[in-house]
Length: 342
Image 1 (cartoon, helix red, strand yellow):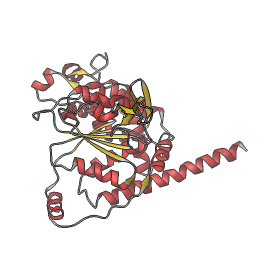
Image 2 (cartoon, rainbow, N blue to C red):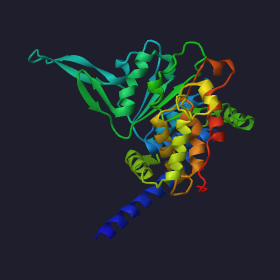
Image 3 (cartoon, one colour):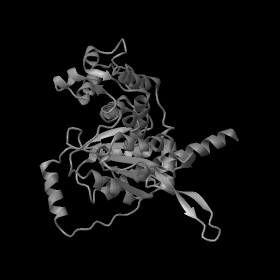
Image 4 (cartoon, one colour):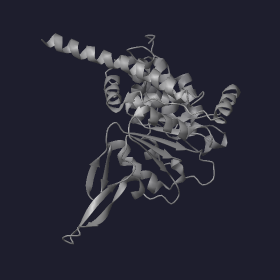
């Protein structure tokens, strides 16, 4: 009886594993009707989607960051809201506010909570660093707890829930750096770069015509929830887990075993969420690659998007033009891989 129950559960998991792979292929196919190139960016957004993480997408204006997120929302059968972050945006404009309603028959007045745009499955926080930290922090509870507290009451958000935020590089005028606590809530910081010449030619050609792609909804919200559950069941060896943790702890300058370049260039290293995100992302990547176990290469491929926004470089690094990406690449070179050949 017990064996049959376990067998049935495993069979159901295998079904969702195949659905995840099939669903990711269908999403790719639909996205390519609109988005040209940027395969790495699309892959990382899907990894976050299938693990329940949030994404910060960084790049200069005009690189289709907003278009990518809006298109993903159209492909998924999920409720979508877009918030344009501006310097005058208030926290209540995001989470909602209590309003007074009067009963015309009795004259009695009561408070009624009007939900803000954060009450959706996919929330696009467009140009999130255009608004001051006080307003940025309005997303903190929603991103971590999947709930909103207002007027002493707590309101749960619908599942699945994703925040996909875009930001312009910090050095541009009129931007506010995101607080470290908020940055840590994002699973990935995905950097969008300029397209190759041949891809840019395709974009220019397609966007200057009357072409209107017919996008199909290919994945439901309930399927996404099941995908997230099955990803967590992917086996993980102790050696791979140790490698992920060692990579993260090596980024902390107060760690006595940290390399000298970390102690010289880093004022604050990555925390526990980085290790968790490396493992979760690795599990989702393994399934999408057709495997049922996490490899060291999965961890290495995700090191940059997971760690770049969690490593805070100091003045000495800036004076030598060393970025957090440079630190991560050096860590990948010196942190030893497991000898088991995983």
